[in-house]
Image (cartoon, rainbow, N blue to C red; front, side, top):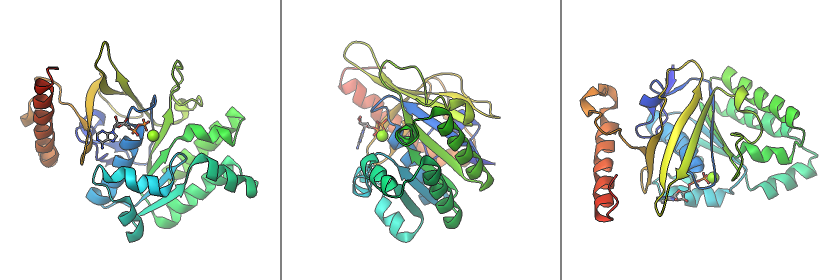
Length: 269
Ligand SMILES: Nc1ncnc2c1ncn2[C@@H]1O[C@H](COP(=O)(O)OP(=O)(O)O)[C@@H](O)[C@H]1O
Ligand SMILES: [Mg+2]
């Protein structure tokens, strides 16, 4: 079973979606699009594919989450009210205060996430900034055990998760926790360039049990859409299977918009 990601143009890079029950790490430096990727996976999963979802953020409070998502047409607050989306966590300072009061540990926080997923029967989890869990668990091997426990519990529940981690400038380690090995997939996001321009790109570094794309793919972040993967020049739309036609028409239209904008700005690809 494959879980459609809701990221335009992405599913075909990973065998039509994430393997059901997998835990996928999305990592990259600051501003590379990690939050948008995860929220898009979650919100489109709810609105387009009828799944229930849990959003865990160790970075942003609810009001910021509601506000940031609106630029992409994602009504997180409405989904929360409807009961299709649960939100856990909050800025690290407040989570840490709560955890301190309760003498809480990473273990308890992860148990809470799993419990909410189970009782709400959620099929998707977006967990932003798992690297920040290291603030509660300075012991790296203990943290790996807990992440592995999270992965196993979610897999048992048939829940497919996307977890983000920030790569610090000048660092190589993908998860910042040495935890990439225990997860089922790793996607790396880039925002790099030479001279005055920068491009966004992503690669699938690992996806268990899947034949996946082995190249870098450019993408754009677009208002009211979110992340849209650029088509590889020369790839023809007719080749793409019927069931994703609606998305393909979208991608082609957006690609034309981007190309036109690039031409106007004198920055042809
Ligand atoms: N409404 C928007 N339209 C287009 N691009 C946006 C919009 N909002 C944010 N972005 C781009 O996305 C970037 C932030 O992405 P985000 O997923 O928050 O990064 P990360 O979580 O990796 O730090 C911003 O720096 C900006 O370039
Ligand atoms: Mg972020």
